[in-house]
Length: 446
Image (cartoon, rainbow, N blue to C red; front, side):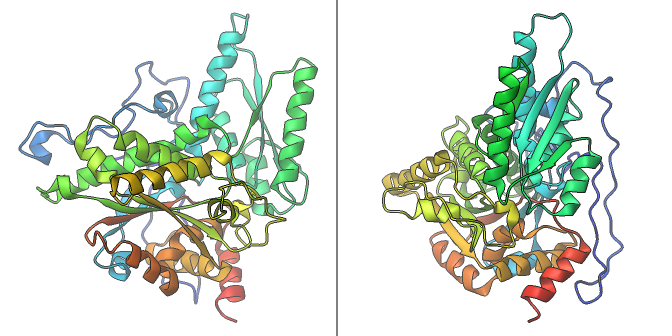
């Protein structure tokens, strides 16, 4: 696929003895966009299909998205169209299902969260500017609470938006590595509370105090905002477009029979899952029959670790009420929301109910792995693909790498043996070689 890689990408190719085999392969960096030189004309929201002469003998446009979503944020290069790659190792494990990896770890901040934060920040800035009586743009401040990745995303995005400042409040469980990254990007960082909920309470208090004093601060949730969900939903638009492009490249003539059997994604507070379900629903009900058919019957797999499974607790409750955990007891601290947004339960049940009513197979399945299985996913992914992810992302890889969970998943996909499996490799910046080695020693070498 031809697509732009994110600003200042650095993939660590691991040569750590005993962890993976060495590799000299690397990806090149793109230069950071100069926002003073950005042209006024917006580029297309998603990658355009290849010309008919190189794709098919027909002039029918199969791959165009149903609408342009988060177009302004994309036109400013605030988030990237990330690669969708075929995984030979995982496809062998999951035969007969081809496995594709959506590499959102290659977003500028290192995680999928750039998508939602870019759409949110550009939207609130537009609202702020329109409400200002001044001829010039006033400075505005966004205040966010984050276990790390959301803070990195909002800081990475905001530093490329003129007149926008950032304060990030992180809990005491946040890795020093992430705190250092936040400060290096220019965020004002405050460490407060034993978990994310305590940090979030302080962020909200600061915003309230600023409003009372006439300040222009805006609260930015790491996951609970419809603007975030819409930004995150662009990942589904891209996945569909990229799968269709790849099918054309392989001279596939049975495009109408292609199906996404499952999309696997990690769940913390539920923002990413809300976006994935929004993207599936938008394409399902869209006017493009081929795109609609691709997601008809898709099972969305919500992946968590034991000790941080707030989605599973609520989704599996008898009445769907929101369950609040007493704390986070998992190595996957980025999944550290003790409760999910109610919207993710509502959207998950709606997706599941549509499958039951139509008998199409649409479903949402909750998978909970151990910390060891999440770490195994990180280590094996590094070995297979030479990229680093943290255990929060390893949770979405665990259903494929874990024998126990893979058997369960393949059994649930047996009604469509040729369907593809897509993993949203959401990324995360709380990882380096030393941390990965330590996790491996603690969980896999006992």
